[in-house]
Amino acid sequence: MKLLENKVAIVTGAARGIGEAIALKLAEQGASIAFTYVSDSSAEKAASLVDKLQELGVKAKAYKSNAAVFTEAESFVNDVLAEFGKIDICVNNAGISKDNLLLRMTEQQWDEVIDVNLKSVFNITKQVIKPMMKAKAGTIINMSSIIGIRGNAGQSSYAASKAGIIGFTKSIAAELGSRNIRCNAIAPGFVETDMTHYLQDGAGAADFLKKIPLGRFGKAEEIANTTLFLASDLSSYFTGQVLSACGGLNI
Image 1 (cartoon, helix red, strand yellow):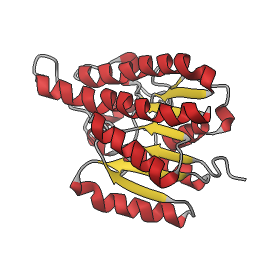
Image 2 (cartoon, one colour):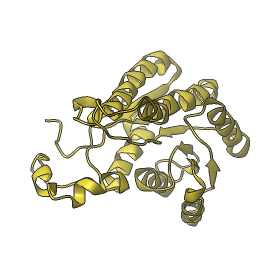
Image 3 (tube, one colour):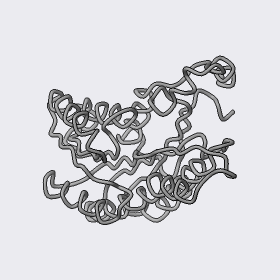
């Protein structure tokens, strides 16, 4: 039997990168997948992902929905419940970066990062805990970042949003543990995605890699593997934890 047989998982921001890898990994282990994407430009990628998921033998559906908007998050979760009947696993993955030195950062840049990265986690989690409490079971996985633990110059908004996710995760774990609902976070290091291409290809890439004990960037599938662990009963005694999948960058 697969690890997630007969489970239903939602993944926000899954049209590409880490989110796509997570959706595929959970589906490989038997979970039906409902995922979000935001822009019209991602519609084709979202449709392609639905096809890939269905080829794995699971039910899958893409929803154009902005998790940073409370009413859209509410509608999304209600639509998933109507279509799939339940939600066992929630992966809050949607995220952006608008890097800039604080001196140059605008209020709009700050607000957009906080809304997409942090408020979205509140919006979605608030909705999914209702059916999870009724079922007396569920697992919530929030995508933080190593930057939320150690900070980084030029990334104050991103660091603040990801650090906020860690505090939120620990608080929800304390609130809902008695209802058999687990809440954990993953803090990826630098992973090979579109968001980190400037680090991978830049002139200082070799020097940057020297700071990572394993000497390489992570892969999206490695973050997906960590997500699978937290989504399954293999982690049944884990809650309120932050797993740093960062190649040793936080040592």
